[in-house]
Length: 154
Image (cartoon, rainbow, N blue to C red):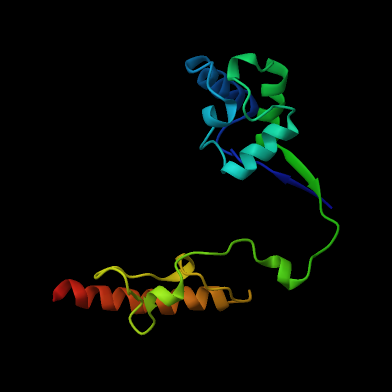
């Protein structure tokens, strides 16, 4: 099955191309990875630039219009084939966050700073999919919110 990804759905290909050209003209000597920072998530930006044949450190003014146009097209219409699924262990996309060792679990309060509370996916908790992440977010959110309110009142 072929999947398509449009990372900038609010603009068409030509608008994306023109916006990029405008950014390059504003700072022509800047590395393209810095010029386009924030357009799409950084790792995806680097991936698309490389896919377009653009060196990340290349100055915007030295890049051909054809390569910029190719990059704009990939932002709007990146296609890839899906050949099946991976095991559950590969399903975890993100990890990390605030260590649970730095939190009082009954209050979700920081052990390092008074009045600071954490919940949900900001925590370094890895759980299986199928409702466990949302359950964790709801439970820790309720705990953190109630305890933050009590702290604010005191």
